[in-house]
Length: 337
Ligand code: FAD
Ligand code: NDP
Image (cartoon, rainbow, N blue to C red; front, side, top):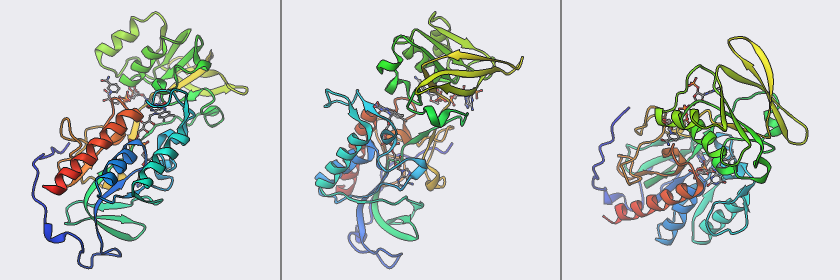
C-alpha cells in the first residue's frame, strides 16, 4: 500500500485556459468529474454553482452499471432525506442528473478509459480523445460482488439483494426467514441488522470461521435469531414469482438441503471501480482509494475522491452525496489558492 503525501503543492497558473497540443481537446477544464452516482452529482451541483463549469463523464455501462450508479439497480429508496414517500432509485438519480445540468454541468455518456495524474494539466482519456483539466473528482463507486448461482438473475430484486441496510426493512422481508451469504464484517453487520425485522436469519459461511472482527463475530454468535451454517455454500436460488428458498451444500459432508427464505443477501465484498486509474493513486489492501482523514484529498495535487470508491464502511447514497459535496468544496478552495 502506497502512502499519500497529503501536502498541497502549487498550481501552474500559466496553464489557465489553453494547453499546448496534447490531444484532441486543447481546452483546459477547471474540473472533470468521473462517475454518475450521488457522489458525482452532488459534486457537480456544488462545482457548477461555484462557476467551475464541471465536465462529467457519467460512464456507459461502466462496471456493468448504467449511468446513475448503483441506485439505478434498485427499486424503492426510503432513507434519502427529502422524500417522505419512497422514491424509485432510477427516478432519484434522474432528478440528481437534471439538477446537475440545470446549474451548468456538461455531461458526456462515456466511460473514462485512463487518466494521467502526473501531467500538468492532468489528462483524462475517453475513447481515444484526451481531455485536459486542472482538477479531477473521482466518484466511480463500487460494484457489489455477485455469486452467479442458478436463479440469481431470476430473483434479483425479487428477494435477492446486495444491500441489507437498503432493502432489509422492506415489507416483503418482515417477519420472514432470511439468508445472508458471507463471513466478513459486512455479513455480520447485515445479519445483525436483519435480525431486527426477520423471523430468523441464516448465515452461510463457506469456511469454519468468520473473517469478521471479534466484536462483530460476538454480535452474531450471541444473537439467538441468527444461525451460522458453517462450511456451507449456496447452490441455487429457488422460488415462484418471488424467492422462496436457497439450496445449499455442506462442503465437508457434501450433504445438500433447502433453507426456506424470502430474502437472500449477498455480503461477499465489493469491487471499487478503480481499474482506469492503473495504480496511480494510493489504495488500501482491498483496493479502495485512500484519502486524507476528514477530507477527499487523495494525496495527488488536484485529485479528489468521494463516494463508495473510497468508502467501504458506510456505502450509502447520503454518505456518498456528503463526500461529493466535500470534494467540490475542496476543489474550489484548491483552485483559488
Ligand atoms: P455509484 O452509485 O456506485 O456510481 C458510480 C457510477 O460511476 C458507476 O455505477 C458508473 O455508472 C460510473 N462509472 C464507474 N466507472 C466509470 C468510469 N471509468 N468512467 C465513467 N463513469 C464511471 N443506498 C442508500 O442510501 N439507500 C438505499 O436504499 C440503497 N439501496 C441500494 C440498493 C442496491 C441494490 C445497491 C447495490 C446499493 C444501494 N444503496 C443504497 C447504496 C448506494 O447505491 C451507494 O452507496 C451509492 O450509490 C454510492 O454512490 P457513488 O456516487 O459513490 O457511486
Ligand atoms: P470481506 O472481503 O472482508 O469479506 C467477504 C466475505 O465473503 C468473507 O467471509 C468471504 O469468505 C466471503 N466470500 C467471498 N466470496 C465468496 C463466495 N464466492 N462465496 C461465499 N463466500 C464468499 O468483505 P466485507 O464487505 O465484509 O468487508 C470489506 C472491508 O470493509 C473489510 O476490511 C471490513 O473490515 C470492512 N468493514 C468494516 C465494517 C465496520 O467496521 N463496521 C463494516 C463493513 C465492512 P472467506 O472469509 O472464506 O474469504
